[in-house]
Image (cartoon, rainbow, N blue to C red; front, side, top):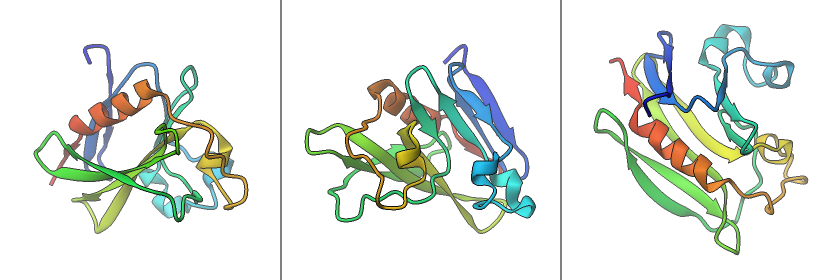
Amino acid sequence: MANWKTYQNAGLGLEFKYPSGFTLNTIPSKYWKDAYTDKYSYRFFELVDNSRGCYIGPLREVGFEGSKVDTKTVSLFYGEKVELNYFPSDNGEVNFIVGGIDLPSESYLMPLNLAPLSNGLIMSDYRNTSFGKSINGGCIGDFETILTTLKLKK
């Protein structure tokens, strides 16, 4: 993690490290304007690694209803634990991971999502979600490691 970057957000009261291969976006694109009003745009961030197809950030709807779920608990930097739900395909590859943490700055649960970089998973209308697009194993490891660096300012 020596060459990792640090993201800090005073409005949310959080800080975490992320790999230098990820691009950090903090301003919602037109794509996300429907999901985030200007009043709450400071809550927005996403990490994208185009080389491996990793996406960490908000997701609209993902059609995994009725899918089997594997659960794993990850310890955060400050000792709190977060439960992550892994949605695997029939062959065991992970398609999507979702969790959430309570932010100290407000009564707000920040979603923590990891998905392959595909619009089918980032914004699904429950018709175009592709279960065949699995997440790169390196992305999963990075996501779990990012969580271990998370610091909340209480």
